[in-house]
Length: 428
Image 1: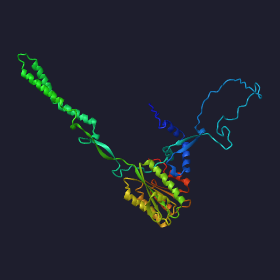
Image 2: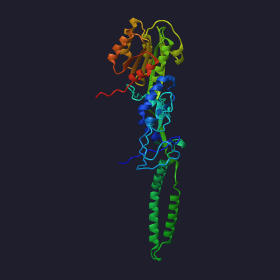
Image 3: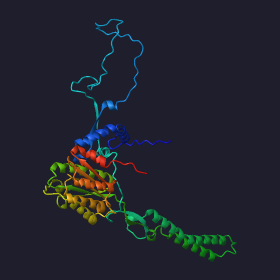
Image 4: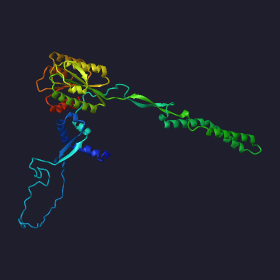
């Protein structure tokens, strides 16, 4: 069996292969540190990497060493405690380690030497989303002909010099020269044979006029052969280009949030972190991701990101207004056959009682058949209200594409996110 080892250095002259091997070997430690970093950091800082520390004792490896062996006689100058034949106690320490707990040099609690290194943004996000998958990930056709790739589509006799095919043009020229010279060469060969036959005759029978005529013909034929051009405009061939639609991987994420009087700024901050985490996750799977922000109280409207998170509203809550608006936007701008559609909704669970069953019908009959996934998070420490119970009916209808979880505080965001998008084993 043949083994290929990639030892190409990366940009900083460090072995990328060895780095990947190290990350895989200590994956458990790194993943634990990454999860702690996610809970500690704001989700808005997810675009950067993270400095990771691993206790030195966890990366140490056993080493075999040769001892002195045998019986030894040692003379220690200035010894006042021992005489020959005394037995010396083995030292109670475990070695000369510099960390507390091993060398005993610290009274500030347990301390250990640490090995620190920095994860890049890509490596950090890889550990953040490790074990997660995006439900119903699909590749859809192009939205328009704007995303096309110019590809070669055969050859043509007309074109611009920059698209000339040198190889095909030379091949055409060679073929033309062979075709044009072949009959002339045959006539030239016949003329040479006739001249040789005439010159071999007896001088008495030889015809000088015939010889002169043949020499004139040979000269004319040689000029014709030399006059065949090496390349002609007739030989030139040009590459033809055509616009070919390319497979596109694009998605739109609808951020739906309740901004009624019951939604405090803390609720909105928690919702923002969840939306940002989902957006980063979508970016890992799709080449193009668009965001649509829909906020609602008694009425819904599409707004900018700044207005979505920071403007204040008062009044009651009618969630169906937001679902109706999302459905209209999909029909107008995002055809189902061309876009992967995702909806993330954040609410405190408050809704007008008579509106919750309308939301259920809207989801089951109109929205869910079009969507790849719908994630609903309810940010409240209190008991669930009517909206949650009606959404539970939607889960029964679409168990693989509709998910709902409760969030109480900011620290619950990442565990809930992992639960919503954890990789599920395929059912055979």
